[in-house]
Amino acid sequence: MARIVVTGGSGKLGRACVADLLEHGYDVVNVDAALPAQRNCPFVKVDLEDLGQTIEALSQVDDRFDGVDGVVHLAAIPAPGLQPNGVLFRTNTMTTYNVFEAARRLKIRNVVWASSETLLGLPLDIPPQRIPIDEECEPRPETAYSLSKLVGEEMAKQFCRWDPELKIVGLRFSNVFEPSEYGAFPFDDKPASRKWNLWGYIDARDGAQAVRRALEAPLKGADHFIIANADTVMTRSNRELVAEFFPTVPFTEPKGPNDTLLSIEKARRILGYQPQFSWRKTYSA
Image (cartoon, rainbow, N blue to C red):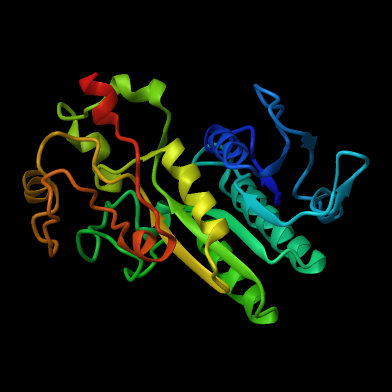
């Protein structure tokens, strides 16, 4: 049984990841500054801005565990504007560095971490290069938050250059929703409120699936993947929305009228990621 440390396991996506990994037979440890609402695995309260604490948390904590096979790093200030920019950038960048450095020192060579869709130019006040957006689009961070994620991706490249056996997979998660939040869907009456990420979202359970598949993928080196659900938050068609809000942007229409405009083809192809959930199932029920 592989032991996985999940940092930020008390958060929205973290809870789903812990549950999914436990369901699939992993031994999981939740490392977070916040207490979990539910204790379904060992919990260790850690300040990840402290390298010493981070190294301890990824190696051994008394009789709770000894040795770690992989790390899922989700702990972060999760969105722009929640803290002053300098605090947010320092916290997210420092905690990510400490997790990567601790993994390198301890020879934990399987790391998956939460990057973000926001480094793709969100909130798209400047129109994107093309639609759908994919991983080949040039990063364009517009906030301290998205800049911290881009710095994390660059750090991952350099850590993997230092250790060619290391795998660090960054998942550019879309806006995370839990099923309990689907009562607000669809957003057809206020499309402008969701154009900031091309009407995308990620069900926390599918986000957890992507994490597990990234952990299990036989990869080496640093890579990153957009992780969104297969559909949008709208019933209005993509063609209509793009014509209204991004009329000058080159647009390649997906097969379905509501297919995601945050391309997940790379994640499908390389990780075997296939979204299983949709707000539409809950809404229609």
